[in-house]
Amino acid sequence: MTYQNVYINTIGCQMNVYDSDRIVQVLEPVGYRKTHNLEDADLVIVNTCAIRAKAEQKAFSFVGRLARMKRDNPELLIGVGGCVAQQEGDAILSRMPHVDLVFGTHAIARLPHILSRVKQDRVRVVDVAQSTAIDEIEGGGGFPVDSPISRFVTIMQGCDNYCTYCVVPYVRGPEMSRRPERIIAEIEALVQAGAREVTLLGQNVNSYGHKEGLPSFAELLAQVNEIQGLNRIRFTTSHPKDMSDDLMEAFGKLDKLCPHIHLPVQSGSDRILKRMNRKYTRQLYLERIERLRRIRPDIAVTSDFIVGFPGESPSDFEDTLTLVKAVAFDSIFAFMYSDRHIAAASRFSDKIGEDEKKLRLQQLLKTQESITLTKNRALVGSRQEILLEGSSHRPGLAEHASEGPQWTGRTPGNKIVNINTDRNRASREAFTVGQVVPVCIEKAYAHSLQGVLMQEELSNGGLKGNTCHAA
Picture 1 (cartoon, rainbow, N blue to C red):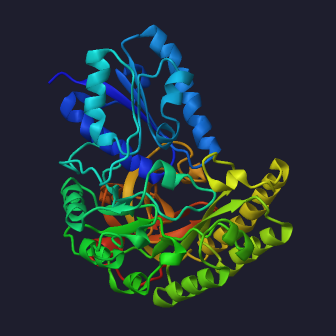
Picture 2: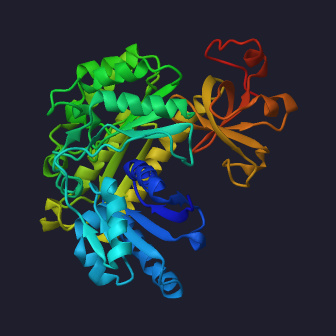
């Protein structure tokens, strides 16, 4: 088969990364292979995100720059997919005459047919129809990806929560869960292809299977835990209101389930949480965290925050700061509120000014940065098992590039560790991607850790103890 090249620009969340891999998968049988060089592309696809205004603007900016390429090469095909495509549909073709196809969040499996219409009929196509069931794509796991060791697997799509700031229920449709046997089969194929870690994806994985009468999410995790050759399991995203006792207990029972949970809270104010339609209180969130830490004392907790939500008073924002200090998150993602025109909050009248939102975001990030650095420093002198993801000699890989040649990986708690291999040749020769190795944490920075291979322990074939001697 003579292949053409497809270049995919993925914008936004982990779900989009997974969807981009699926796009590569469905296009390979019809003669496309992925390229990392935009200039070599016969087909360019922009996989968009509509969660925040900045991501949407980034997508349209990139698509706009493709007009020159289309003028230079009229045979080039340009497609826009993902959440912005689902949201805007025909408007994208009107706004950007150089775009050939627009396909929504449920149309990936139909992409070969869409491309066939574009090529054979010389027409521009919009497909944003939503399915009533998840379209399974056969042969999962065997297609080439950029990070074969750590892979994403969608277990459900859509959302039924309708938070007032969010467009997901509108652009990804209602909540639907995949059959557990399809999920297990996909993960087994990924492991056979070299994966050692999987992250299970969904807008609210905690409610997996509820509507369909399938096994609970905790039961699904137990099945995944039995897969031979898999080292680690992660998942995202969890909704606090649906955090079951069984799921919390899983952190103490399943040996492959990493001690890390991403549990978005969005605000520390009960008044704002109610306006957001989050359906839990500050106290319930704190109780969930307390119980998780009783079950798994070493669990790392990360979260999402929105600052400057309409009507957020100074005291509401202070409640967010006190929550951050009370929980002592390992890290957070924080964003300024931005209107999404199809979400309910866009119609709220009491908006916060941009300057005030920026000040609050800076204050929140500064507060968390101090907490993160303190928690990272507490790991100095500890022994961590690192799943190696790759090596690099590029300047700037670590926060202190002078540390020398680096391998990089993550702790079970999802902290980045850069491993100095400059000290002895044996360390450099010991590493292979996908290997789990014992590392002594020697230094801590704001966003990463620095460590050295515990060569003697590795040579003796045993992972022992929880502490080591840091230089």
